[in-house]
Length: 326
Image 1 (cartoon, rainbow, N blue to C red):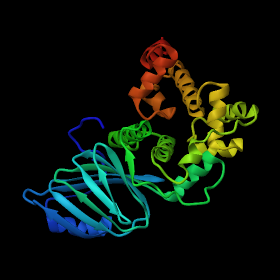
Image 2: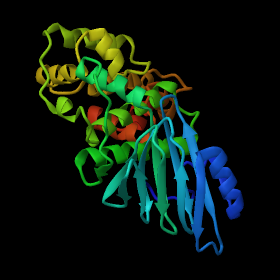
Image 3: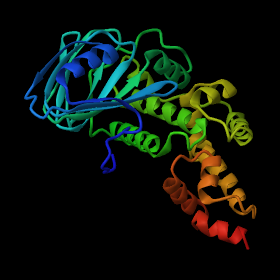
Image 4: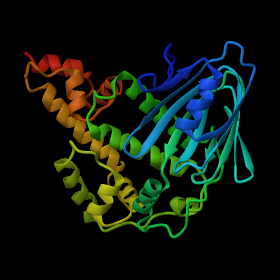
């Protein structure tokens, strides 16, 4: 997460309080906490920020004192990422540390307990198992016959965990900049990317199937999907949509693109959008700016857009815009 004076998700406050009794009431009403025990409550402060998107939720929580909370079962999986200090989560008789070494996973539909050290700060990613199953079905080409059965921890240093962390941090930064500044497609694709990253980073009943080599589809699938992407680049391009269009599993799609083109289908989506952004910048339209072209082409971050643009076309988008205005 980038350094900032404001806490993550500050645009989406759920509550802020310096009253321990008020915290108990709010935690019971809003977070399903049936019991809350606090220690060292001098100069006590607590805050929770939360946003729920279409398929996932993201929260930031911080307390100035030690805290133990007992929760009713929730209808979502919680992935807890420590930003400062440490904590534990306990469910189904198993306790998991949450610190700089690992993320903790609290399953859905099971009562749980959380214990946080003083000055602890964390992000909590909320995921719905039904949505994860849909992503898994698209990747595997068939609906899983059994539940995920998630392991309770993710090693923070694993490459997939680092990717998940970067995606969650990027989403939080974009939401804090201006949640209404980007097309809905941007957030739909970010939600998908985070869920797929979680399925790759975590260990679960279907990890082996995800890691097995996928079959190659027929040669025409890649060209057909490229045509589909060219026609629908303004919309959210998700794995589920590509799977429906191609009639093969997501893993087979990715392997086919890598084998025949040397890049992924999502890399092709980015290339198409960059090309359309270039056309906008060269159009000579006085209302076009670098930021408006980036947003119109579903790039959530102007800085990232400029970097990708320069890597592709050898110049900054601002330079292209100047040439288009001559």
